[in-house]
Length: 336
Image 1 (tube, helix red, strand yellow):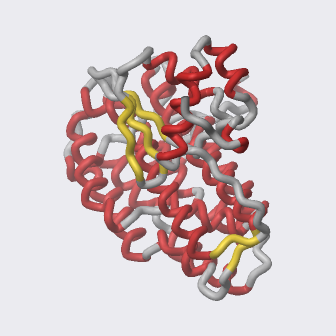
Image 2 (cartoon, helix red, strand yellow):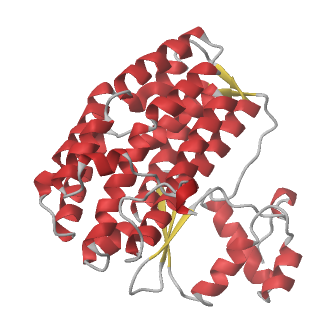
């Protein structure tokens, strides 16, 4: 039987993304920039996922065995293998984190989370024709609300910024993003939604939650907000694939690829402005980051990733319902 150190008696996985591969019993585990394919050789996929849910650093091997009815010997084997693969969390008692390490870790994590966001069933259902065309219209409409909100969350971050260098960066960011939403409006008009209806539309709750989360992050931590731009701003290396994917989705929904050309132009503008490098620019003149600030920024990023998931969940739910108003209307006093 393999032995393990005291620190692994309470195993905790590094943050990972699990993707169940269709038509197979395999699970793809993404940890940072590394991919691991887990095949079903012993036990079931469901049992593995159950075991994984207890690898949180709060349950001992013995407790996990009692809860899952998996033998301690098998659990030790799993823990040992995960440790050798570098998949277990390793905590250091540090007060400062090197800038380069922080930037690299944020970059890897944002690539992982962006890929997971892209795997959302919203896009699969649009591409397969399972979703009605209004779902794609809704996706662009809610993206319009989200893009228009840039002036709101960037200005909130600016209002709470106490660093002159960060203030300059955010001011330039605000100026670049202030007037991009008309491009989204143009696409919606091409898809048959009149301009006045778009401008008077009320965002769905998932969109408002996403916008409010960005405002709250900007209110609490400038570093966390700037780190979040690494997740929500377009990347040059992803542009062509994103362009092709959006055009394919438009055609699958019954629209023309040219209908989303203005949206693509917005993406191109973001790439050319190089907004994805804001974090590196913000930290250019320092060597270390306070560990507590780094932890807070990472947790904000993780919450934001799940807010994007909720954003897509709500789009699919609201715009799939044939009884809902499109665009969504505000409810005023006389509606009661």
